[in-house]
Length: 301
Image 1 (cartoon, rainbow, N blue to C red):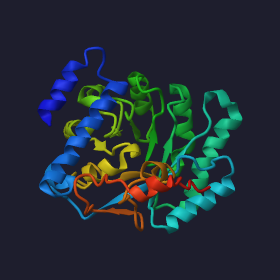
Image 2: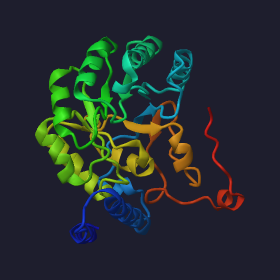
Image 3: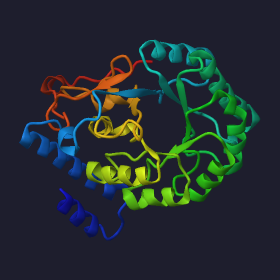
Image 4: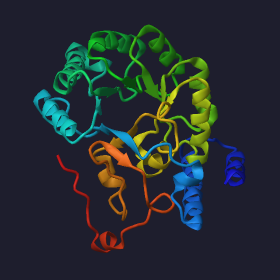
């Protein structure tokens, strides 16, 4: 696996990011799946074995209405009652939305904290859509709601902006889902620009590379929580890591309806926890019945 990854990486002479690295990631993840199948074991057992029997999932609320605070409160309470002790919601406003948009962002954070109480974690995603001054002002306005983190506060290449924001605020910052390989992540680490790294196992170089990124992060005492796009590979990563350095796994509530629709054994939280997988490899077997029926996923509301 290491040899193949190295050859592919060295051969990508016109760039080792974007779609090229996504393709390399797919090959690498397929090899980890094949190794598990060959040995007739789940992938996590050949990564290093489990550190726990289940991993807390945080409910990632991409696609849910954040303009109607009544609906926000209703949905937040619903998922709290399903057992989730952490939720991530997505701001819909940035600098171009003016004072009213800013107030709506603050209202979202305040609504979530009021609804969920003091014990649950709330995370807030900024969609790479803000600038330094805006984020600093926003962080000051919502600091009393105690967000677990602010995510992707600026465009991913603006590492210096992340550093300035981190130095000026008390809310932890997360990001780097759109960075690739350990070398890309090292830029954030060296700049002391993030508290939580979020590489995507399907994008950043595959399981082989994200394991290296996580090891690099521990040297800086940073947390690694992979981006939720890679749920199936993500659980094999998460259960093999220290709960201190990987305390959560992201679970995109609506997005997983798409990503796992055609799988036989979907990764699904129960009472806010994802259990240790029992499927062989990465558990990516397709369900032929759904394919034959051309069954479409139900996204809910």
